[in-house]
Image (cartoon, rainbow, N blue to C red; front, side):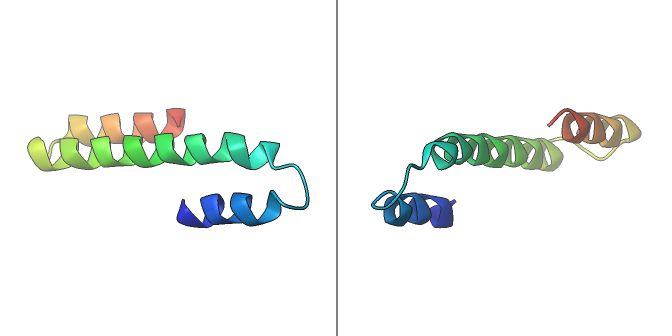
Length: 61
C-alpha cells in the first residue's frame, strides 16, 4: 500500500496517475476485508460453516 502511494507521488510529476488513484482505495478495502475475516476467525470457534463462509467471501472478492 505504501509502495502504491509512493509510486503515485513519484510518477505524478511526469505522467497522469489516474489508475493508481483508483487502485489505492481498492487495496485499502481489500486489506480491511481481510482484517475483518481475520477477526472473525479469532472470535468464532472453528467449524465447517466458518470455513465455507471464508471461502465464499474470498470468491466474492
